[in-house]
Image 1: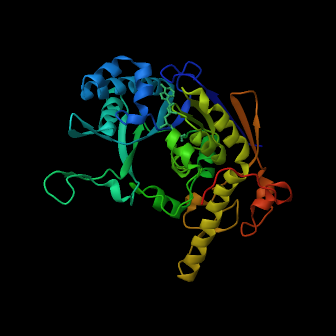
Image 2: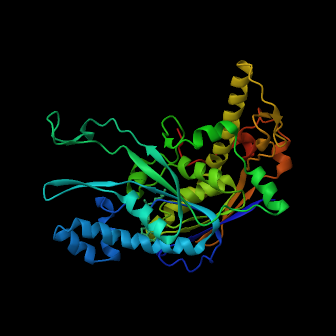
Length: 376
Ligand SMILES: C[S@@+](CC[C@H](N)C(=O)[O-])C[C@H]1O[C@@H](n2cnc3c(N)ncnc32)[C@H](O)[C@@H]1O
């Protein structure tokens, strides 16, 4: 039976002494964004000299000093990541008006340079489009040229790889890789360099919490985990916040480790983890239902799907999807304050139900669903 463990450390990720060298298969994270005001206090707490930079209007100095704090974490990533592991860093640039001068601080470029210096290979990145329709989104001189500024409506997901391509030499790793494959139609959406989650279930809908924690939507780490790791792998988020990466790792059957400086997130994280069982099942049920809808649309268009998935028995587009499995978490247990264990339904249980009939009722006694993430 598959089980996964999820370890939390409320510590500074510039020293991840509890994570062994070369033990991490995938990093997914979003750091505090330098030069975005909501993070000034935290950065200044880690380096009081930044306060002085800001006070005397040396914003380029502040920008660099904030990034030097993040650099400490990027150094640790190089140590803990395995050869061939991916790192996906969600970051937005910052705009700020200083001494009446409007300026962009290109966080993504500064982080990219640092990763390159550390030895990572830069891979094509994803632009996460976050359009806003707010009427006050435009900045500058309104309808008068030449003094208005385009609105930042995107963030980056920077993608790096440490060293050579990951090797899958043993029979076990080859099989696990095939079981962790994704659907052809998922590949077509996920591997676009433009992501727009409009109309996609996103994760916790608690707006106040999202704003305070700058949490990314659940779908973001969930996709990346499925794209860049295998079932049973180890995923690290050094800036864990509300634990979205950990929840996505649980849903996808991966182990995880998270670091977070601010211990006040502990109760939120605990509540989210313990109460989101049915939500985490539902995201996987959605994958199956979306695939069944895709199969139907192919049949309606007389497009032939040549292969059959051996786990669910439904048609799939390519031979690579034949061994694809989707895991369903059965239980999440807390072991002390800092450790969660997830166990999953046995293969034979999932296989015993026709995919068309699978519903949350199969995974919870008497149809009881205790959800606390709202995905709609
Ligand atoms: C943008 S938020 C991450 C949000 C997270 N992705 C989520 O979905 O909730 C960045 C987090 O990094 C934490 N942080 C900042 N510096 C840190 C450090 N040196 N070590 C560990 N955590 C840190 C902050 O407290 C904050 O919660």
